[in-house]
Length: 456
Image (tube, rainbow, N blue to C red; front, side):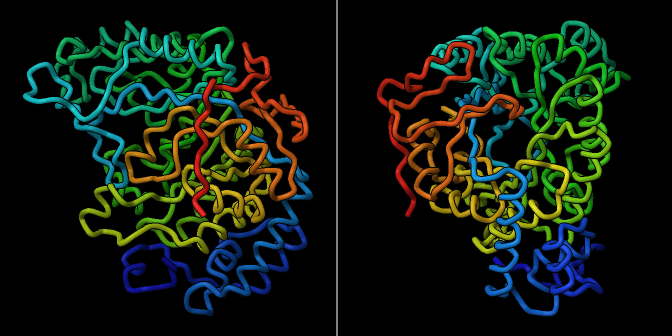
């Protein structure tokens, strides 16, 4: 849906109106000048002087962004061999954009009926990750619901157990639930198998891991790093403008706290990624303000953010859609412009990711010609987008990547999480399997790899 200025936008303090012109903003982008928020709004709207998106102007923005991509990273398209191991869907934060969660009460031992979700023990996580490592993955990514029984470690659990009002800090003991998720430290230790890269513990999870204490985020991330955590996914960012967060996720931490947690993770030596989740109630001004906050964060953490990931809101099964707050998600034009303006605005973030889970094959490849240079990972399992109504599958093989990336004349490259290790793949030299993981030997991840059908 095109997002020009409407009466609905006026309910927000920030609206997409500027004193800049589209032509001036585009000229600055073309010349490589650092863009202002007003410049970004002009590019993202294709000019606030026009109603809706002007397709000819849009193509000019995409062309400039694609040229910038070639200048910064060349013709390589990267991907990582990874597994998603989400530990639990139990959560009671109540974000209106999410359908991944299940009410935590449905996991309790005295709940009548079965829960629709899942919780994995540390032992189960280790078994799942061990199997994936033996198949050749480089990275395990884990993002989970905020289970009330979760504590950072044994010391944190003692503090929560002794709290005068445990419900005030969203805590119930593991004995109240059918399955004990263990502690965050135990889960990280369980997933730290044979040198696999562990990518986990978002700022929201870090907040949950320090609730009821006066511990700093640095202390939390220091303990998690000691347990085996390598990098932190910058999800739970949604839109880093609090007037939007108050609508879509009032129970979550605010923008400043998210940023503070990210800085703390970087301060203890953990790498970062960053995201935006767009296409719901926000407008273009909010999106560009979000980009500005990420750009400023990157300067404060000395370049610790390796990639920026635009995530298009998948609306079908979410409360925002069911309650009539939104009528849909972002349009393809908006998706393309979000990728392009991210490339142009974030002049200190080298890699922009195209999410095939969000955009599908055809859309994902298109984004690689709008400024993106990374194409996600194999992921082996993906529950979050699927439960929200996504329809683009759960697994992408190395062979799929080679075929898709080569089809647009680009160079397929397997990478490490932090992009420091890279393997260029020759499309004429099958079979295709990962080689960078601790046990990778070039064989396919699955013996009988199911192909993800093209969505065109």
